[in-house]
Image (tube, rainbow, N blue to C red; front, side, top):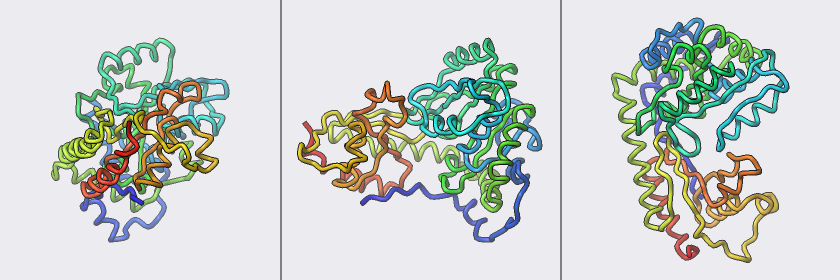
Length: 347
């Protein structure tokens, strides 16, 4: 079976882990070195000076950070507004708690998972106007913010009014291809960040100290290593590399404007009528069956995207699978070769 592994973690970050430094617990808001590195990196991107002591909180992955924001700001009966399709963990997080503040939240994801959309300035202005009109807090999930292939605009930079109601979510795991480290953060005004930090302290107290130190080094070295530009160029080449294999099979696919996901349309794939699926797959939409078939027969793993939809709209994604191209070129070539085995099942 093809086992998915990420692209290589930057050596300047992983080398720090070998020293086994920062073994002690850190403060709940995160290691000061990392908060300072984040503030330094994002101040010019956000168009304002970020205070690492009051406007940054480091969380145990971006996902936990969003959960902390939900716990900090929403009461039972309040609404969380999501654009469909959405990262499936957002709905799970929204069902886990009863928050402490009476506000409502708009979750925005750009670059988007799973479709790779980057929201335009006009779209962001329209969203921002509605949030201002209805006094809605914005959680802007920008974990793929370093992987954009069209102009990328952060909603918090459009006006001081929007900056005042926006929490921006980031991820070292996505930035530096080390998702197992679980290092994320939220940026925003102090009067919003403090509630996220309070919830984070109650959930897990603090993240992993040496991994936060390593992420800090990654930020400190990224510019001088030209890491961000090389990362974008590399990922675009991987999209083209894997896409070429789908084109060879006549399988339509999306070209992302950001991130590293491709949605491929398997409508032409005809599953054998007598193929046996386990009960937990048989009861799910068609994309689960196609995903199972690819894993078991081709040795290639993909995500069934109906998970990113409500039940009412899941049918819109039943013919698709989501592939992550953040793999080595060798693995992408191996996947392409294995997928050629689908040819006999395509109409």
